[in-house]
Image (cartoon, rainbow, N blue to C red; front, side, top):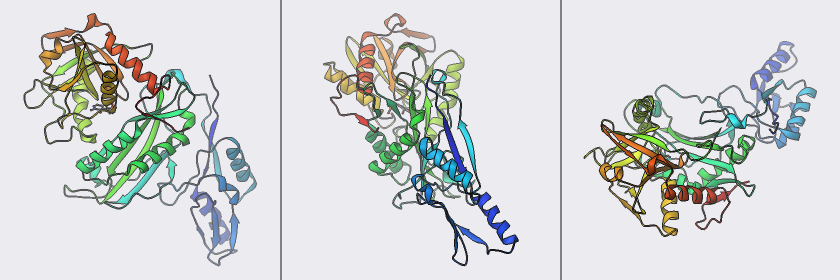
Length: 440
Ligand SMILES: Cc1ncc(COP(=O)(O)O)c(C=O)c1O
């Protein structure tokens, strides 16, 4: 296991203010102003214009303004820069900082699951509705201040994305089709009256956060760094309208592989009671509200021994839409079928990748309405998503009926598509469609 020693140097505004106050008490100096330095360090001076300290030595360290007014912090530095920062702290009595161990014990890459682990840095940018997104700093991963009347808290005006960064077999840190996540977020922003984030800006933010948390990318095969961009209406609003202030955040968390020990087929429960989306609603974008409505159906399915719930269309209650947070596919007589995107289904990036790979392999792929009766007669079934990759389905249960696919084992076409997709993603094979982005 690689030993990882990461520490953070935390320099807070408050101890500096304390220092100034002591000087004033002794009648030697006037109250001082403190600037939050970016890259150049911390400068503080009296109101007589006399600089009493300049910590230029910090120029290699990105000093990040804290989200909390009245305090600033410097965090996450390691290696030689960290050592220098620690020395400066020791040798500069004016600067009251703290050296805080944040991750002294080695990371347990084996124990990773899909749960949040604190990271060092996140991207945070806030604008007035409709303004241009500004160049913004990375800030520590920490609480964000938000008013109770924020649009997102009251009316769910928000969307998210889900992506991952990982080490490839070629030794690169890579992203998979990030432009498509950025474009999908733009579609979501338009639907939810949020200010769209330009594609380049979105990708730049993602790259910066990944590289600042590079040490949290699990070794190849042990998982990935899950990336969660968020676009939220954070301004205060009482009526149901777009919030006057919008916030774009990107945070990350290391997660384990979805399948530990090979492809494991899953059991699904068809819901006739709950629906995920309606025509004209927000099913085709990653609106946060879509997911709130899915929590109870998923809980019910899991408590009955199923991996996930499978949704049918809300009008006729016959046609398959999606599986929890993944897209559905089935195979009959070597022809691949997947529900057509009709405004109620999320256009999954994995879905599109699987369709493209399957067609390139010579399979016919039909995007059409798929009734649950048809799907229950299929030879194979699987679902796709960033987390699920290609997840084989062993059985589907609807009321009294059960369909078992390929005797409950992983089917040959599901296996082939899983292998081909992951080979491209992990740079074990050529990337004929130009999907993989090397970022480090
Ligand atoms: C509702 C829903 N469907 C499908 C998917 C799969 O999309 P992708 O392949 O882009 O991860 C997701 C996950 O993002 C989802 O939330």
